[in-house]
Image: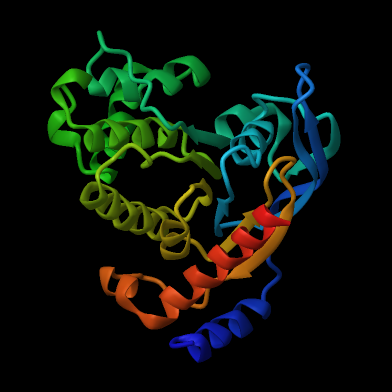
Length: 271
């Protein structure tokens, strides 16, 4: 692959320093009360500062796994090990849902400040305003802080949702198909902006998507999940250096990796 030699050099340099595991998922299974068997013995390690994408067919348990990691659901068996302090874990994980879920009666700034007011109650108004303005600037919508959600496009509302998740400065950011409802142009732009933000802030990211091309463009690793019950059937390192530019989408090596993942998924579905 193009860039593969440089990729291996970077890996060699990184190996000189121990890589910290921020998330250690061991044998996690989930069966709902309805009897739906969503996950089957999922095991996955995520390194600090990395960007991992989860792909799989509908019903493969990707979103369920993300919610278990966030503590919004409990697993039936297995364990989730976070290298985060239990006392501050709610503040150290940010979650971006498929829908922006903004309060329609509140301004964008007020929406983005909600985690600060709920989780960090010792902060004064001046510090809340400062942090809110900072994250709005990170995602490029600080000029719209006094607007209401209905006044913004879908892409801008999703930017606000990402800003809200980042206000507590989490170590781990979980994104559950945040761009699925957007048009292709807006989605591509937000992919690039999200990567720029990750490179700058270097939180750890786990991104759930149905789009193989999106996963390969964004992630250092693409974890492929089987149809229900979801299992990890492949964990693929992506050999492209950052920053990644729009031209990567036209690269033959990029297309080859996308095709390989697509074939793995197709085989899993037909087995």
